[in-house]
Image 1 (tube, rainbow, N blue to C red):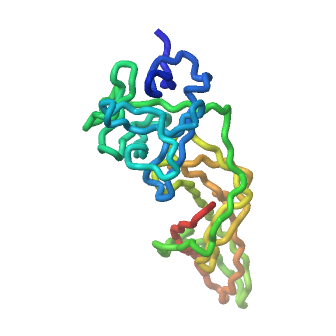
Image 2: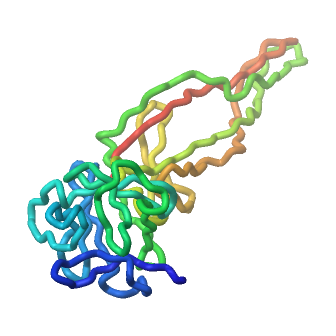
Image 3: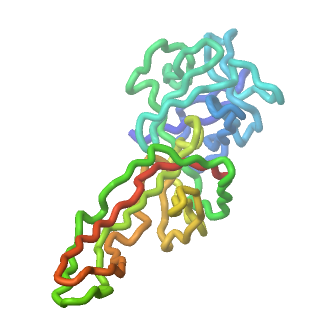
Amino acid sequence: MGISYLGLFEEELPFLRFQIGDRGERSVANEVVPMPDGTSIRIKNVSRGAYWRRNGEASDFILAEDDLTTPGPDSLFQPIKVDGQTIVLRNLGNNMFASRAGYYLQANEPEIEEFFSELTLYELVSSKRIKDIKFLLEYGWVYDETLVVVNPGEAVTNESGVARTLSVEIRYKDVRSCTLKANGPTMRLGPVVRIQPDEIGSISDSSAIELIAPFELSYLWGPYTTQVGDPDQIKVHEVTVPPWSTVTVKLTASLATYEKLIK
């Protein structure tokens, strides 16, 4: 028995039914439209051009029949992500979860039913990349600054009878990470989106947010962290050492976290 995709059947009412064998069929395709507050979505069936809506008169069945510009609660859904491509939907009209009832989709479950409530999303494109990203630095902020010892000490010795200026090499690791995420659940739906920004944010020596080159790395949208710095660095520092003395040079730095908005 093959996979049955949720598609549109034009009966007396435009029911959504799990009876389509080809996910490339037009009635299977839907467009997710996030609401401005980011907490809910509308789902538009491409073939009919109408949004999903819970029909209370049809025993809470979900139909593709809403074409109103201003949506009511019955055509709003709160997506909850289960894993990479699996979600469940809560209808905001009655706060019930959408579940499979026979061939139909019905918003009538007070709890998530693992087999009947979980829906698998499929992208109808082979890949997705985002490149044109603008960082709103004026809305960024730095917090949780702490002083850390990067190198506990490199000793340099002057074995002569006069003061000398000597160079000392201090090795340290410059490790930075960047996580791209979205507010609200809607941008986390579906497969992973790859992002290739021309620049990424970093914290400067003055604790300000600046933009640096991303070392030609590719980032993943979501809870994925990518190292963007060279871990092996050498800083050369000159120090004046008194005669017949040893000076220990330590390297300290500020460790901090920042957040910024992008569009």
